[in-house]
Amino acid sequence: MLKPGKVLIGELEKVFWGAPFEISEDSKIQVDRSAKVVEDVINGKDAVYGINTGFGKLASLKIAKKDTATLQRNLILSHSAGVGHAIDDDIVRLIMALKVISLARGASGVRWKLIELLIKMVNLRILPVIPSQGSVGASGDLAPLAHMALSLIGEGQVRYQGNLMSSKDAFERNNLSPIVLGPKEGLALINGTQVSTAFALAGLFKVWRIARTSIVSGALSTEAAMASHAPFVSEIHELRGQLGQISVAKGLRNLLANSPLRESHREEDERVQDPYCLRCQPQVLGAAFDQLVYAAKILEIEANAVTDNPLVLSDDSIVSGGNFHAEPVGMAADQVAIAISEVGAIAQRRIALLVDPALSYGLPAFLSPDPGLNSGFMIAEVTSAALMSENKSLSNPRVIDSTPTSANQEDHVSMACHGARRLNEMAENLAGIIAIEILAGAQGVDLRAPLKTSAPLINMISKLRSQVKFLTDDRNMSLDIERAVESVMSGQYCDDLDGISLGTEF
Image 1 (spheres, rainbow, N blue to C red):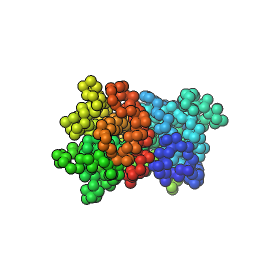
Image 2 (cartoon, helix red, strand yellow):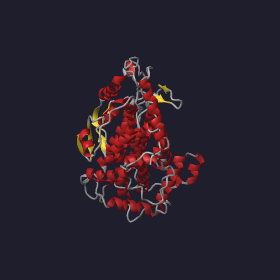
Image 3 (tube, helix red, strand yellow):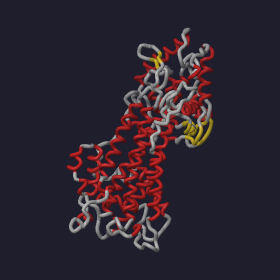
Image 4 (cartoon, rainbow, N blue to C red):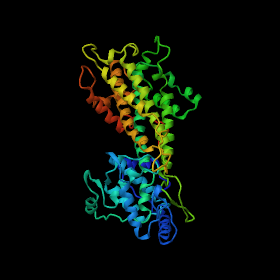
């Protein structure tokens, strides 16, 4: 049961992964109150923006009472101007849930029946087809949210139980009726940051799993390279005090504890220090985790926010503001993008180290038992470099790229929507890098036989080997990478391992 204004990010993650939801009816009184305020405006003489006026640059034009329903319908139709690929169903569910949470705060002036219809659609999996492009992140995610709203009025297409059909057909199959929008309801549906926020949350949920897995992949590389565990000693990190760094170091210590492989080279190892990609894992990954946790807090606040305009305030006044401006979401998305890029960058350097016999402390070239005849991990490392480079370019900030719109009425925008949307592409790229590191690290550890690694890493390699066999002779590596990517994205390489506790769960 979601409580508007108090929804936790963990609850949103469950909705994203497909869980049904209900909304607390404690907010119904407030919703009904604000809807009555809007109704009184329609029956009065004053012009109030968004209720009986035009929109944007047309706000000075008053609309007659008899035309208010047409005004709201036309708003949805005219603003359904999105382009691009359809948004994935899991993100559409999250968009709709976020819109419910916002409307149920009781400051938007909509009727309770509108909120109920949105909830029924999500739980019945009647999901609007929403083009992914068209929002500049202010005044709200207008175009994509308009496509969401189309389905509520019986227009546009939906995916119902995996099948594409008209919203009318899906409604009829479930004994639902399209809604005739009341005053302000069209504007309340399309004004808001829910698409930007949903994209950002979706990226964050995926990246959290992948970033946690990067601790496992880093531990494997540490063992494969026969690197020192000394840089992970707890006091080093406590002296600095950065929480993410402390947590990552603890995770590495737990994964590497009691490793016979480490004990085998404690004496007579001529290396004094390891390269930064091994030695500075807690510092780099920890900083990334701290950014992800901070972004999660910002997005949790935004998920509970009322972000349409105008708003019905507690004194029954209706006031225009700017909560639709998605700058907080855009900046959070930029932070997440930088964190993704850095996690991938340091992981890629570990892959490069493992395939280079000049750096890998005795491993064969490109991790092949028979190099020359076989190329081993040569091009898998190149692929990881390509993915890393893509993420570097994608991590450039988006919020700084404002441009005026709507005849200069909306003259500064956040670009939060595509800034958040790219996180999903970046997450997939990062999953590819981490999957390749897991394959390379496990290969390197296996090549150290008969020496063995720690118990947690033995279990992890066993899980991998049930999907991908040790690379003896060259084969189609894209299939190996694909299987490993699926496991990285699902979190199965880290979620059930004992001893990993980051202390920074959402």
